[in-house]
Length: 289
Image 1 (tube, one colour):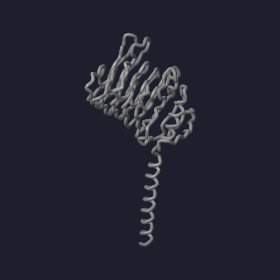
Image 2 (cartoon, helix red, strand yellow):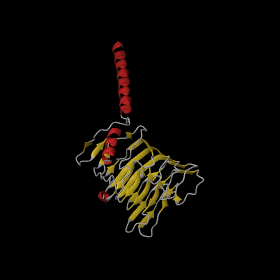
Image 3 (cartoon, one colour):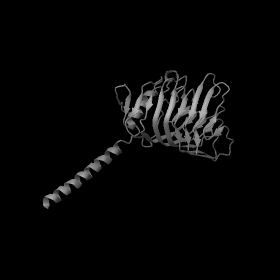
Image 4 (cartoon, one colour):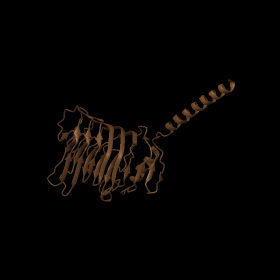
């Protein structure tokens, strides 16, 4: 009897210690907002990302002034801890050239705790700011889920999307899903204005398939916006010769709450603005719930 009681007590204690160890490890895996750690690589020379510190290291490497072409895959869910996130490919353009141009496979895992607050100088806002460029014509981002919040309180001339701010000539976005909210209060919009999309702010020469947005977009009472806003895409293939794109089997099941007294133009649940006088786009089997 005493032996059985001893074994039972030892089992309970072992269980308690195991649970403590488990939850401690979970807490330790939440990014602290500062640590950068280089990930290990797999047999295909792609980075294997297991933590927020490793993901932040990739973001930091991608913002050194040139196209960043290294692939990465997620090995588990990532918690960014709601610390301010500087986008991968932050403010990428033809001058900075720091587009992200590698392949990304989320393997069905979720990046949560994403938190971005825009600045006046931002040209693209999102988990990835600028994705594409000449080095990315065959690249794919797939199987990725996002959760978090983006606050746009000042941003005069930018492409804003929760997954990608500006998707420029990459091959495909597929099976990517976002439940990241956008709180848009910016009133300092210039003549060019902002493009705002639940998933992608502005897209050129890119295919998007089997993806969705289920978050909430709030356009505040004092906000102004002079360009397109959409539940999935703010704009695509706008007035650019020779570009093709496909938007297929995508779903908008979020909420757009416009409180502004300003006139908003070019808005819809799927795509905000598109000038197809020079480009070619196929749109089929998309749903707005």
